[in-house]
Image (cartoon, rainbow, N blue to C red):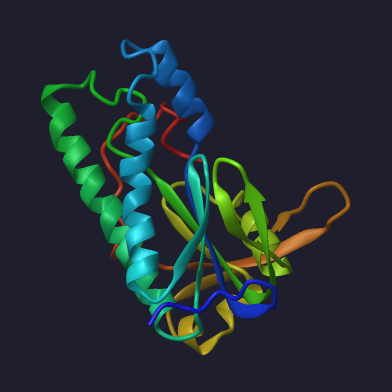
Length: 220
């Protein structure tokens, strides 16, 4: 059963941000290439659709879409690990398809050789909920809380496909029983200090596509 999202009261859940790595250089390379950036939105849709389905299939809800990233919430329980594995396997399938296709047609998706790379950023905690309305989008849920901010901040750490956990999430029974690397740290913005995080070991799950080692658009 999907996690209930109230209109005007707090909830406790995992904040999950799934983000395409190095998206700004990818857009630049796409615009400079033969396609002129056409179909880039469809490409982004195809990559993020798998993550959306994974969150929704594991009792979560997707709250927002932010260009090349999505923000969702997943309730406490085993659903969080299963959702992460599903996201990893989904991007594996896409990368495998890209790699095989690009062997014969290297000009296709030239801005992301070997397929996309994703980061999953997670923290657990309380989030306050309200609603906000625009003429175009109608009324949407608005979630604010430290867990969301923390998940966003630790996303700058590491390279390539990765699943990063804030300290609260890493010590939850849902995730602490799996292989974790850490604690690690990354500096925050301005005077925020350092953020501690852990990396969930998906070395047996992730599949990174074939790409040029000099192509920074894939890493990040």
